Amino acid sequence: MPRPLALPPEGTIAPFAELPVDFVGSYPDPATRLEPELPELAFIGRSNVGKSSLLNALTGRKGLARVSATPGKTQTMNVFRLPGFYLIDLPGYGFAKASKVNRAAYRRLVEGYLTRRETLTGVVWLLDSRHDPSKDDLTFQELLATSGRPVLAVLTKADKLTRREQAERPAAIAAALGVPGDQVQLVSAETGLGIADLGESILTAIRGEPA
Ligand code: GTP
Ligand code: MG
Image (cartoon, rainbow, N blue to C red; front, side):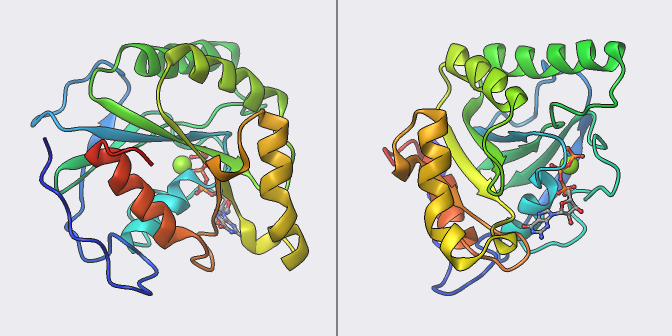
C-alpha cells in the first residue's frame, strides 16, 4: 500500500507542486519494469489533446513533460515518479501523419501496456472539450473497455470554451461516450480550472478508494 499523501492546501492551482517529482525515463517497451514497483496512472488521449501540458499543470513544473508544437511528439512512455506512485505520459493516438510502421508500433505499445501492465491502477483519458469524441477516441474507448481498467475521463482546453459551453459540453460528451455525466472532469492546463479536483481524483485512485 502506498503511504497516504497530504492533500494540497485549498486554492493551490498545482496540486502536486509541493511534492518532489522525478523524471525517471522514456521507454519504448511497455513491459519495462520500474524500480521500485509502485502503482501508476497513465495519461492517454489523442495526439495534441494536452497530456503533457496537464502533467505540467498538476505538478506545477512548466518544462517537466515536453509540450509539443508538432503533434505526435511523445513516442515512448515517459515516466514521472511522485511519492508513492508514478504518472506516465503515453504517446497520443490518432496522429494523421503517422506512418503505418509507427501506427503498428504505437498500437503494440499502448495495447500491450493497457492489457498487461500489472502496476497500472487507472487511466486518465483525455478528450478535447471542444469536440465530440472522434472515431479514434471511440476506437480507443473499446480498447479501454476491453482492458477493464478504471478510467477517469478528462476534458481538456476548457479555457477555449465560452462559459455556457463550459456548463454544457461535459454532459454532451458524457452522453456521446455513454457514461454518466459525473464521470467526466473539465480542466484547463492554461487557467488551472479543474486541476485541483483532478489532483484529488488522482490521489483517490492511487489510494484505491472508491471515487
Ligand atoms: P502529444 O505528446 O504530441 O501527443 O501531445 P500532448 O497530448 O502531450 O499535448 P501537449 O501538452 O503537447 O499540447 C498540445 C498543444 O495544445 C500545445 O500547443 C499546448 O500549448 C496546447 N494546450 C495544451 N493544454 C492546453 C489548455 O488547457 N489550453 C489551451 N488553450 N491550450 C492547451
Ligand atoms: Mg505529449
